[in-house]
Length: 49
Image (cartoon, rainbow, N blue to C red; front, side, top):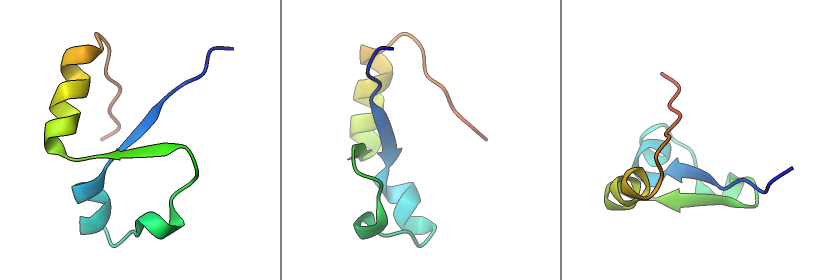
């Protein structure tokens, strides 16, 4: 299986009261500018609403 990158929007995490200290190892935090960069870099984006 290919390795996957998992990203989390840091501002959303903070707004929900989560701390990066409790983050699972390997999850990468991004800000909104980083999120925009990811949507440009990858042709598929998965969102859970």
